[in-house]
Amino acid sequence: MHHTKLTKPLAPFSRTDCKVLPIEAQSGHDFLPFHTPEIGAEEIQSVVETLQSGWLTTGEKVKRFEADFTEYVGCQHAVAVNSGTAALHLALDAVGIKEGDEVIVPTMTFTATAEVVLYFKARPVLVDCESATFNIDPGEVERKITPKTKAIIPVHMAGQSCNMDRIMEIARRNNLKVIEDAAHALPTRYNGKMIGTIGDVTCFSFYVTKPIATGEGGMAVTDNPEWAERMRIMSLHGISKDAWKRYTNEGSWFYEVHYPGFKYNLTDIAAALGIEQLKKCDRFWAARKQIAAAYDEGFAAVPEIHRPVCKPHSQHAWHLYVIQLDTAHLRIDRAEFMTALKDLGIGTSVHFIPLHLHPYYRETFGYKPADFPNASAAFERIVSLPIYPRMTELDVESVIGAVSKVVKQNRR
Ligand SMILES: Cc1ncc(COP(=O)(O)O)c(C=O)c1O
Image (cartoon, rainbow, N blue to C red; front, side):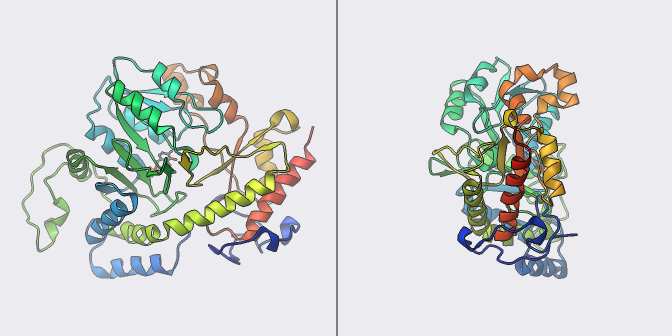
């Protein structure tokens, strides 16, 4: 059954109000999904208005969403596209990645981050993560640079910023471009600076589980007007400027194809969602922050659960709350732990199965688990817990209760 009872969504909650109840008595649901998007009346109205407007695809709503996003992040240009993957692809194209180039990518990420490098017949060079944060290890980045290296794609894991000072310094010294994968990082700050204002191009995702959601969608942001223009043109078949306007009264039937581009433009229907979601982005973040704080407190007395390590340089977006199991002190492994939580009605996930463990990357590049000791070890221990604004305080308590119960029943 779907969880429907929302006692206090988005409202500040206090742990002292919560009583630890048996799981089945909590929240009026028998399964708490790993994620549910927070869609309110504003999003619904905005989509309905768009449907009634007579204009469904890229138009004024997309332009508005881009303008709002630019202002929110504090960057110069934003190009809306239909996925985070498309944003990464266009970013690599804009900075000039070519066949035979090498691009440094963390192994601890989703395949999209590396797959876009392969679109160019370039090589994704995988790099291990730091054991504490799971973010790309700058020392390892430096070790993997060759004369063919052209770019680095740091991924801000779970919404915590990578060490951007070191990454930018390494990149500038080696004449490399930095394309940030900020799929998890809205809003994330690094030493006070918004992610989206540091690297050469930064790519966000609005996939349904992400900090703001349009179902599918993404945004590439940059301060470089030429790259922005290139990404805009390539997102719509490589045809001339303002191609989307050709069916408006300001537009013209005439267009020219300048490059073989892609079909990556965002629809106004999706942008209608995005505009309303962006307005709530800070509130969503506050709600996730509160859940993270409750988890931190709830797991403080459970030594087998290692809580996320937060670096002082980062304002964490808390897109994910990733615990590490001290498997040496448990009688069950990570997969059994997740099954036990599922049996108690709690959906969980794993971020990520490191790329070097997947058949494609393993077989194509000959990677072995020992090549990435931190990511390989982390993979055996990580579990992502539900963390999203629709969760009620009882939902949060039910997760803490279930995790604690599974640990207690399986202590070595
Ligand atoms: C780290 C990371 N990068 C890129 C993506 C791709 O985003 P999208 O699904 O919007 O293409 C995702 C998630 O889907 C992700 O988690």
